[in-house]
Length: 105
Image (cartoon, rainbow, N blue to C red):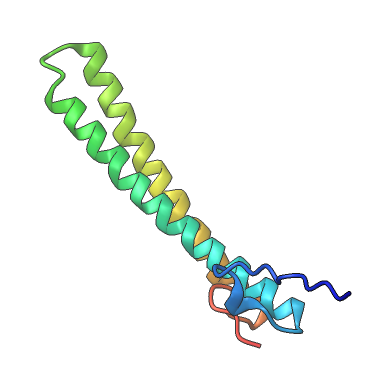
């Protein structure tokens, strides 16, 4: 009696399914990096907006105002880190002669 096993596939990574694992890993890592940057940018926007709303609703309370300023400052530092990671990836791509952010083999 033959038994048939159903093949389990993940539609999220199906397009990376080929015989060349290195190519797929590079494309997957680049896609994950781009997704992380997009999630970071969204979180940055929300965090700065939260700081702005906190500032507006501080009502003269110095503690709340300082907390709101710190949120905005931390958001700006986060933005600088996101921009720096992209700049470093682009620089390394130029040094090694490959496009790290959009690999093609």
